[in-house]
Image (cartoon, rainbow, N blue to C red; front, side, top):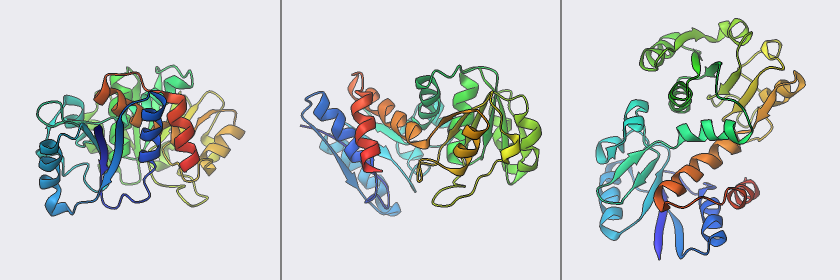
Length: 264
């Protein structure tokens, strides 16, 4: 039996297990997905133990995405983003960041052309993944963040990107094609980081928040005629990317999506 899993702290409310287990069932794989909750001090031992025991792959979540970096051999994208959310144990532990693919594959699944200009709101972990992913796809990236120096620091690393404060969103979005909310604003609250009057019908809007699925930002974007993509799609496709990386098999996207949404 192949073992995959998730390492984080806490992990009891994760929806990754049912999503991945659905893939194993759909493809008749002899595999299980389990959760591990080490302390920060024992993270290195956890990675070593997983490798020694033959674990095939691990997802990594809060608060370990950055601290796991020196414990694995990160691929170039994970190193640029500065965070690892997936570890592959085929040989020496290798770190990847599939959050980036979660962004681009969510747009592509909804037939959104990855071109033109994107506004990424937020310069934290999700914002970094989105900015690098979209820039690598050939999109011109504008980073908007509450604290401008943090936006500037990210923009300096992302090819062709520029940085702005949130007060510039109206101007930035006027001719933008894509919008990603990579902040937690709207999670469990009816708030939005983007003024409703800045939204328009030529936008495709991805909100990384998935609790609730229909955020205020997505409601207001839909009312403006924009195409909307909820955060569960980003969560799904980072998992799909990890599954395919570990197994070299095409993920059963629809089965994983059903299981994910049933668990949310």
